[in-house]
Structure formats: structure tokens, C-alpha cells
Amino acid sequence: MFWANLLHFYQPYRQKREIIDAIAAQCYRPVAEGILANPDARITINFTGVLLDQLAEYGYGDVIEMYAEAARRGQVEFVGSAKYHTTLPLLPAAEALRQIEINDEANRRHLGDAYRRRGIFLPEMAYHPKLAPLLEKAGFDWVMVDELAHSGKMGTVDYTKQYIIEGTKLRAIFREHRLSATIMSAGPRDTQALKDAAGTALHERRMIVTAMDGETFGHHRVGHEQLLFGMFKNPEINMVRVSDLLEEFPKTEEVKTVACTWASSEYDIEHGTEFVSWDDPSNTIHQLQWELMNLVMRTVHAADKSAAGYEIARNKLDPALASDQFFWATAKPWWMIEHIEGGAYYLLDTLQHVPGVSAADISKGLDLYHQIMWMSYDWQRTGKVDAVISSGQDKKIRIPLRTGTLEKGGVDAATWDAYIHLMSTEEKAAAKRGDYEAAILWRDGMYKLEHKLDIYDAWYVTDLLKSRLPNKHVEEVIAEYKAKYDHIRGGQVEQRSN
Image 1 (spheres, rainbow, N blue to C red):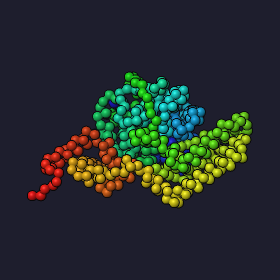
Image 2: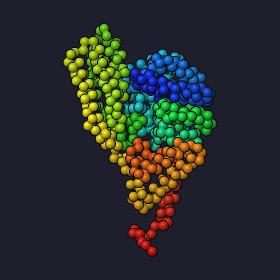
Image 3: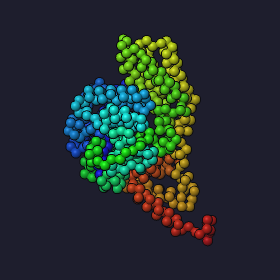
Image 4: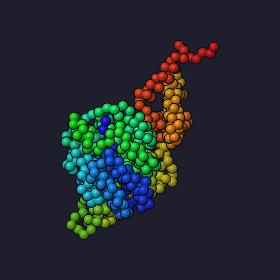
């Protein structure tokens, strides 16, 4: 087994200084120190250029240098990306390519010759097959995409081979959806629990591919960096860089990929909503945001490139294309007016700096800015945000496990009993080994199931159970409980008293 893990480090343009300070102390510095302290550590890292610029500005050049040193030692592999975390499939090809190029420039400026990218991480892992020729043209050997990009279905990737995207020479490296999310959710808190989650794959000649926000380790999940360091030290977890997989698994197969992000589900792909967090046809704020962004892009593209002030406008446009403004306007469930306003402001500011911009375009841009803000505050004041968040919990995840099992009775009730038994067992085991955070997780999970609160979790507690334990074990316990039911049930549907 060869385990390749990719960390995506990103903070938005003009992030607050105190937030950068906190994340540097909690995550960026300790992770760098952990890598350097473990000579066998191998990992792939994406630094967005906008984060590197801010780390350098705020005095963290020594942290950047630690990662560069790890790369020079062969421990770290850096990959490309979009500098300002733009949703590349939704941009014109020229703008998508520019984001990649200015990201390369920032990485080379800060990391020097340690930056020798072969692969690319797409922000939000937002991928569309139309990007493949562009990425190949940009000189990448591979792109990491979610496993759903293989066929729109989970569990269809053969991790003993590499895949070449149809019509190109670009390799697709498929991230394992469930295992990555399991690590991000802090389900496994030690390497033994992680190995349990990996299951039989740990002992097969195959690749394991995971990817997640780098801030998961120490910032989003306090103390979770210890799991990462444990992975480096454990001899059964053979860590490699993603590009190493191309040499270890030379067998290739051509694949016709499909569009998705790392947050997509099979349901999203079936319904054509894989980019709903950034371009939701039913979201009027999104429509206004795209209208403003397209107006600004058209105006910049049409401007005289030799005119005084053009470069200022051109450089302002780059961060104004960031994806955060759309993400935080979805209300499914993400919502933050600060990011909505910031995105609209940067676009309007860019428009106002375009040389020769017409009064009509300025007026239109101001009107769109005001509409975006008026509608955002109206949604919040009137409760529409709460309503959208509630409705955004799609029907597909609003059926509590208790309703579909215990309350149906019969053999389905046995499935409920099996899950509760498994979770109770995990709770007691965690408490016995002193992993009280995990014990609380299982206790709270059972409470959510008992009170039908699992419909509010983006990550079902039952899915977490499946990811923590080998599927075979879960299935065996469920089968055991169903067999007990079959043993005690009578030959008639009705229950009879003695």
C-alpha cells in the first residue's frame, strides 16, 4: 500500500492578521516542524499564492522556509493551483489559465527552486472535463479530482492503476471520498483508528489517496496534527508523495471523466447540481453576483491595455474573482454577509479603476452592488436565510435512521439495534483507552439517532461508524441481529400473546 495525502492550505485575500497569526501558531508552523522532525515523512502540499503572500507580509518567512527545506529534502511535493481560490470551471479559459500562472509566480517567488510542480489541486476540487486540455497545456502531469469524477459513482476507481483523461495525456488522481472526509471529521484520533478506517486496503498493493484542507490539522481540529505525525511514524502506513504513485503504478487506463467537486454527492451529479455552492440557478444573489462579475470581466477585457492605469485594474480583478463570495451566499448552509459584501466591493472597485470605463457601466455596477447587499440583508432580516438553510437539507438526507429502521419494526428494527450496539461498543472502547473526545462523539451520535437529529448532520453518524469500522464487520453485526430477529419471530405477521 502506498498512501498519498494532499494538504490544501488557503486563506482568503486580505484575511485578518489575527486569524493568520492563530493558524500559523496552531497549524502551519507545527505541521512544518512535524514534517522536518520525521525524515520518513512524505506529503503533497498546495499553498495558494494568496496565502504565501500574506504569510510573508505578516513575518512568517521562516515558516515558508521550513516547507521549502522539506521539499529540498524530498519530503514535500508542491503542486499548482489558482492563486485566489477561484472556481476554475466557471471562469473563461483565459482567466482560469491566468490564475494558474500567477499562482506559479507567487510560489516560485516564495519557495524558490523548491517549487517544482507536476500536479495541480483545483480549489474546492472543482473539476470539469473541459479543464483537462487547459491543464495539459499549462504543463501539468496530473490533476487530483474526487473519485466521483471517475463515473459519477462511488467505489468505481481501481486504485491499482493510473488513469489518463480521455483526449489528453493528463493523469487523473482520484481522491478517496469517504476516507478523506473521515479524517477531516476527526473520526480517527490515532493511527490505529485510522488503520481500522482504511480496512483491508492497508495490506494490499494499491494506492490510497486522501486530500483535505491543511488547516484541519491543529486549527479546525485542535490536536489533530498528532494523527498526521502518527501517520509519518507508523511503518504500516507507507506515506508517499502523489507523483510517486505514477512510478509505483505504471499500468494505465483511459477514463471519460465527469464534472464534480470534493463536496459533491452522487445525487448532485445525477441532478446536475455539482457546482450549486457557487452557481445556483435558484439563488437570486448568485445571479446578481455573476452578473456583476461578468460585467467587470468584460470591461477589463475590452479596455486599452496600453492605457495608464490598466495594470492596476487588471491586478485588482485577480482577487476579485475569488470563489468565497458565492460560497457564503448559498445559505445551503453557508452564509456570511461579510464575504458577500467583500466580493461585491472588490468587483466594484476593479470596475471603477478600468481606464475609459463608461458612466453607464459604473452606474450598472453600483446598481448591482446595491442589489446584492439589499437582497442579502433582506434575506437575513426576513428569515429567508433560515428557510433556505432548512430547505437546503435535501430530502435525501432528511429521513432519520430511527424512522427507517426501529419505527418500521420487524427486521428493520434489528438493523437499528445493530447500529446502537456497535456505537455503544465503540464508546466504551474509546473511554477505556482514554480517548474521551471519541467517546463523546459516539455518545452524541447515539443521542442524535435516538432523537432523530441525524437529519441535521452533513455527515451521518452512521456513515462515520461505517468509516471507522471495516464494512464487513458492520455487515456481520447487522446480519447477526437480523438472524436473532428471524429466530424469535413467529410464522404470522401479527404478534400473539400466550
